[in-house]
Length: 293
Image 1 (cartoon, rainbow, N blue to C red):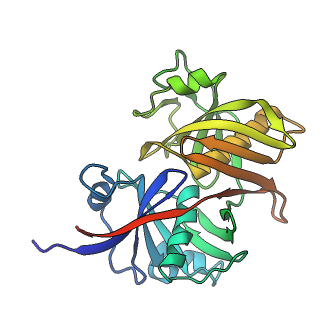
Image 2 (cartoon, rainbow, N blue to C red):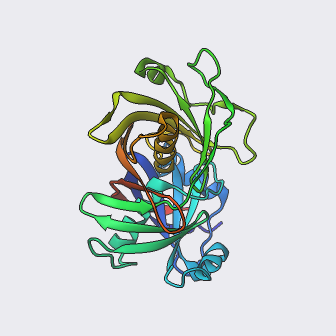
């Protein structure tokens, strides 16, 4: 059986790591088995997911987005580490744009913005001095979230459901000791279980929670299809939105969410079509290598 040589790049954003490869013409789709091998941390490259860079015109989901915006050149074809498809990844899309720049696939200057196609729609990403900022677009809240049980929690906890292109369930904890005690190797149990599953965030607000108009909190996450990760960009956004909802009137629109892999900034702002939320943080490429699939 012949081997397929593939050049891949390892990248990470606040410890949320991915395996990238370019397939501009969409001629090299990847299988779930190959995704699982690539993301295996012992036998493969290792990562929370695999991201294929494909021109929007060469993938069905991208062609649909081109009808909305003809400037969408690149589509982020994202796979969780278990081989399943994912709609959106807030950390992954920042590193994806860094990858496009370093590979010479796009030319983005400081302060400029690029539209990126995802399964959650078009997301605009801007290059800044501190990294990248993603306009995550509209969001919605589901006030009656499922009851959440997790190893390390003595009793089930209520939650709030937040959708930011992919589904999230956010649980507030009382203290850092509760956050530290969680064991998130296994997926938390959700009752009722959302039809598409959900990423589950556990959050502890800082004390004080708000300083000089900015909210602060710490978060851990179990991502559907990937397990516990060092960071989740969309999860940080969902966490900030949940905290603002719980805090009520007067809560800030600017938040800093600390995850095991670093810190992410979230900002809610008005637009003509309604409120949007943005995510800012670093994006780094670690190394490039060739693998045999």
